[in-house]
Length: 116
Image (tube, rainbow, N blue to C red):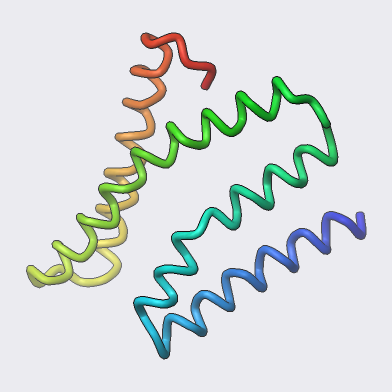
């Protein structure tokens, strides 16, 4: 239970650090947010829980494929904001687009034989 709480606190601290840096230096906050910190931390914790090379390989490969459908969100949100849409609707549209692209990626991945 203590390990779970420590993981949650570490994750929360990372998010707060990104937000604090982003207030002062938006581009630096974006750079830090774009680092695969969560993915790397997740892989470390997964490896500790289940040190299985095949499982880790599937996890890492699936992570790559799931990152791709999230990228258009980071183009849609600034486009919507710059064209007068408010923050919350822009964020909502970005999230909706991402969900739709995730679903498409799952279908495409299955057709291509990817382990997703």
